[in-house]
Amino acid sequence: MDEMTRLIHERVCESLIYQYVRMVDFGEASRLADLFTEDGVWEAEGLTLEGREMIRAHFAKREAVVRRVSRHYCTNVDIEVTSDTQAQGLSYFMNFRHDRAEGDLSLPVPISLPKYSGEYHCSFARTDSGWQFRRLHVDVTFLRPPNTPQVATS
Image 1: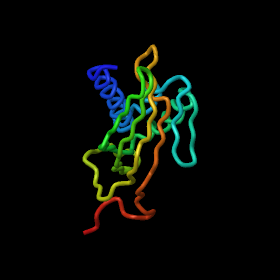
Image 2: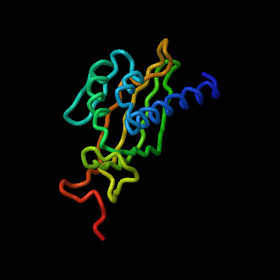
Image 3: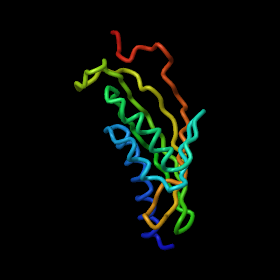
Image 4: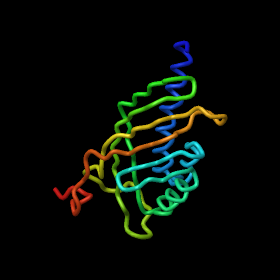
């Protein structure tokens, strides 16, 4: 594969990571299922979602939580294209999250500590629809302790 083709494949896979977090953060979480292959897998500790429809159903529940404001920040994205149709990726992420009172949809919201941070471990497949996630595994490295105020008290 020539260098330009490899760079294009890397960039498209990197973009999938950014699309994924943007959909979660901006109330379109159920749409992120379309970023996965039909038999794609999303997993985190204690939860494995197999297939696009299971992923869609799970993230539709997240989409329904309109009082939640979140912003995912992704960095250190490293994509390795292993063939014309396969790639692997790793990205660090941090999530700031605040749950407003029921019915309160105002912005900005107060926040101090991130809710969690960790890595996305991804495998990608190039399909007839373009590049998609084959698997996205979420590893949480840091987690805000329970009962820690979401807002700085000083």
